[in-house]
Each structure stands twice: as structure tokens, then as C-alpha cells.
Image 1: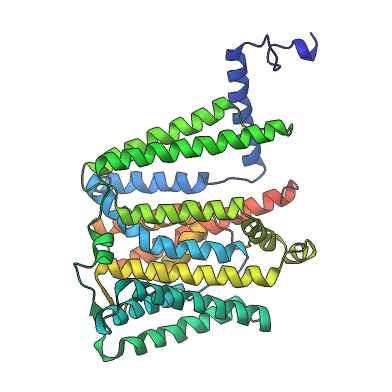
Image 2: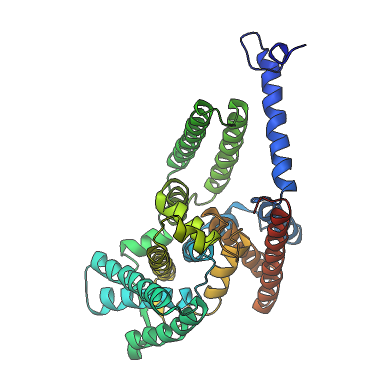
Length: 415
């Protein structure tokens, strides 16, 4: 039988059922090929999250209750936003140790300008976010102009901006934000109506399927390997069922928080920017090889400046969300385990410490893991020291998986 006569070959006489089976088989084979090549994707994170949830649910049946999961999602937004900025600098193979201090400084600027100086809320927010952006530009300038290691620059920033935060707050110590201000209501009380949550899920999955179909058609028109309609349908259908079920379960309590939706929107937008724009491709290129990126004509210094600025700006936004969630800003804002959790979330979610690998969704997956550990241990009334130790173990495991994956890719010639 010739190749053109093969029942699985595309043609006018091919059986659609056989084509569907071939498409599914090809998708499975492609998945296993990526795994053998060291491209594990989000599988280790998702698998670890499932194990964590099963363990905590067995120890305390309240863990997977709709009430606890609603609280968990709301707790993810602030530090998750900070972790999103950390992902960006990790893509360059750099680090920012001062995101906690920058978030605390932004919270202090918001509280002082809005409450004590009686500024309108919008200018106060702009000032707080602008401070974060200026901090990042300062880091980028010091890095590109003097060649200082990002570790040293941001370590100095951790101390310096913590001191500036204390100076801004002055003798007051802690400043409460009005509960009737929309920023506090946004962080505490705004939840989507049930119908709006379902509609948002349907529209989001529809947009996801459309993007996949459009990309598959472009690749097929260029005679490149593309996803089959079956694969796209299975992915979109599975995502739709999962998200609708999640929305329904959260709606059994208070529902889907607007602040959490805002965080998800930030992740999606940043993912589009990283994967669909010239700037995003340049970030990955610089993280993969600075010299190769420079020879390709990429303005490397500008990439570093913009990434550090965006990281500190997102840290400021996260600090504002945290202050709004607590309805206050004080000397403890941005301190404690904020730095630990933000950086750990980015790494645990799949962003490589070696640069060039990771995605915006690393922040989402990582912060869900971090907050799940925190929530589960809180329900078990265990000391915070246990949380630190378990988070440290999970972080080390994530780095080990990343290192093994990197070696495997190098051995197979895929790195």
C-alpha cells in the first residue's frame, strides 16, 4: 500500500474517526517525547499541588471546603503579583531580593498620601506605583552602567528601602485605610455575581480555543506541524469543565473575588506580552544567552532596565493589594516572609534560576502551592516554623527538578 493510500494519511477518502485517533496518538507521543527530552512543563508543580491538597484534606476535611478555598484565592493575589515580577527577573537569570521592601514602601506611600495628606485615592495610587517603577529603573541603571550584580544591588535595596519605609511612616507606625474606600472594598468585599463568573469562564475558554485554532491554521498554512482540532477540542473542553466546576464550587460560599480575577488578568496579560511581542521574545533571548542576543541586534541594556522596572512596579502593586486586604499599612508591611514567598513561588512555579525558562503562569502555580501549604498548616494549628521548613524543602525540590530537566535537555541537544 502506498503512503497516499494509507488509511491514516490525510486525504479526501480518509475516515474521520481514524484521523481523530491518529491526532490523539500524535498528541500523546509528542507529550512523552517532550518529557523524555526534559521538558516537563507544569506537570511536577500540578502533581505536587495535588499531593499537597490530598494530604491536607486527609488531615483536616475543612481544607478543601469552598470557604477555605475562597480565602486561599484571595490570599494569593497580593504576593502572587509580587511573584509575577520576580518571574521576569528570573527569566534574565537575575534576582531581586528587595521586592518585599519595595512593596512595603509602596504601601506606606499610599497610606501617608491618602490618609494623612488627604490626596485623592487615584493620585495616591499613582504615586505608590510610580515609586516602585523608579526603584526598578535605579536598579537597571546601576546594573547596566556599573555592572553591579543584581544580588548586591537588590540586597542593598532591601535594607535601604526598608529604612525609607520607616522614615515615610514616621512615628505613626501603622496607618489604617478607610474601610469605605473602594480600594479596601476591592480587596475585601468585591466578588463576581454567580452568572458573571460563569460568563467569564466561557468567554475566557472561548478566547483560548480561538487562539489555538488561529495558531494551528497559521502553522498548517506554512506546512509546519500543528495541533489537531481534536487536541484543541480536548484541551479547551477539559479547561472549560475544570473552570466551570471551580467557579461553581467557589460560588457555594462567597464566590470568585474580584481581586483574584485582577491577579489572573495580570498573569494572562503578562503571558501574552512575553509570548506575543518582540519585547517578550527579547527577554527570553537575553536570558538564554546575553552575547547571542546582543549579536542578534537586541538592545540588551534596555531589556534589563525595563524588566527591573516592571519587577519593582509589580512589587508596588502587590504591596498596595496587601495593604488594602489588611486595610492598613505599617512597619511590618512587606517584611516577614513576603520576600521568601514571592521568590519561592516563582521558582516553585517553574521559573528557572538559570534564566531563559519559565512563564507568567509560574507565578500563579507557585503562589497556589505556597498558600496551600500556609493554609493547610494554619488549619492544623502548627507553628509558622514548620511552614518555613516545609516551604524550604519544596523550594529545594523545585530547583532539583529544574536542574535535572536542564541537564536532560542539554544531553539531548534541546537546551
